[in-house]
Image 1 (cartoon, rainbow, N blue to C red):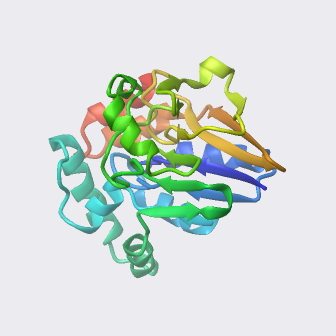
Image 2 (image 1 turned 90 degrees about the vertical axis):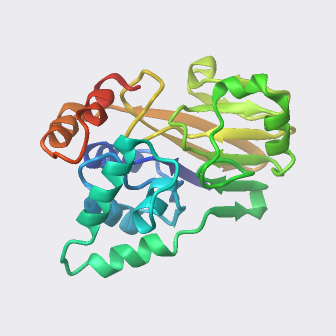
Length: 254
């Protein structure tokens, strides 16, 4: 079985389309999305429609929840963007109710008991809102609490920073293993799949992973995909309720 896992699309249609085209080349069996389909970007309805069509599983992200209910803990720029997003999804359309229904039933976690894996947006402990950053290797209590909740693997997004935490409290960025790694048969791993629509590791290419099971082997591969970030940024600049900063950061991957 081979699975593509993506996260944090953030209404970036150009990035999502480029990633889906790249996924076609990977011969995957299914696609999982770890949430934040919307927020920040200029094309929320188009991204929701594509995820509904293409993804076998989609989880609830904090921005998806913010579109459904009043956002909590958002900065001013993110809050303004999510209220604009809500209005866009609520525009009269033959698919309006279908989109709201889809967002409304998204689960916060998805367990894959056969593989000892759990899929979340934020963290195993707080699936919606908790961030796991690379520097958390210096906060052993926090990471140990996460690993206690994991059988073998956890897949998450939320920080937009790709990489793998190991249960000996180390963090490996994709560059540390050339983007592809066969994980050991023992141990636990927290795997951040990065962001499709708003990377923040100073690489502005869209990011996703493939996860392949071959017998007892588990192979993780990070994929970086070029897309027209300038086109997306120009769309953001043209929308008064989306701060220019949200477009500018796409060009730098930060």
